[in-house]
Image (cartoon, rainbow, N blue to C red):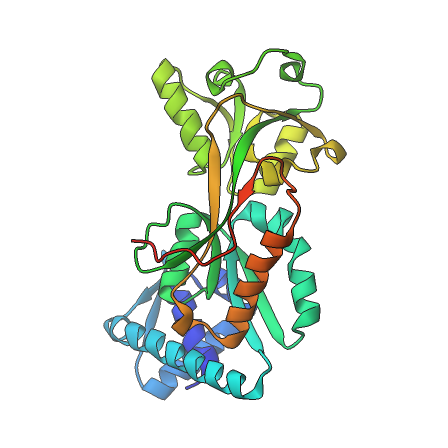
Length: 314
């Protein structure tokens, strides 16, 4: 058996379906199936069964799963030792990130990293904080950029920055002409485009509950770019982080600051610990932290704290 087969098995076990697992690994579905079949042939037993609801682990698959994770961890540790000897970080690094960070910050960082470390192959995936954390814990991701607080107490978290949330409205919206400071309570009856589970959405739901109103939701999405474009098209308003609003003048929406809102998000880089990171993953981690720290304030009052590693979350 080999690393690719073990990674294929772990990804299918995590996703529960072959199609998203294949996409996440950059394989065709038939290529993924061949990896799984080769692994099962090597082990002489079925690990997965396809059902209408997806791929389900057999009893043998459940028993093999923790061993596959430990085997990949051991391979990663061995690879890291060899990389130290060669002095050249190389190989794949899986980085998970929030949609907004993937779209609005990493394009300023990853190309420079790729030029500096041409033998390292970053693999980027986007998602919500909870799913990203889970994938780091399972070993599917080496690193992840998530919103604090971190739920898993066995992850190491390094805070990168914090930023306030602002109100994104269609260009020329009536709220841009209001001269007095606006609170979230003043805009709860607007029509909204939201990403469920985002800090801004939770704050909106809490404010609506306090005022006894039901939020008018025009659209729920899990994609930040879709949310922004829907606002631009006039579908509704949205609470977005300053990172996403920094170049709004060149786009089709306006920004309305919320006075004394207290709405903010804290962004951190998480991993399972230095011992689990390859040399390539350590270089990417350090490069992201240093790049964020060296940037001028690109999103207004955002406060970054990337100077020193954060404590293990307890």
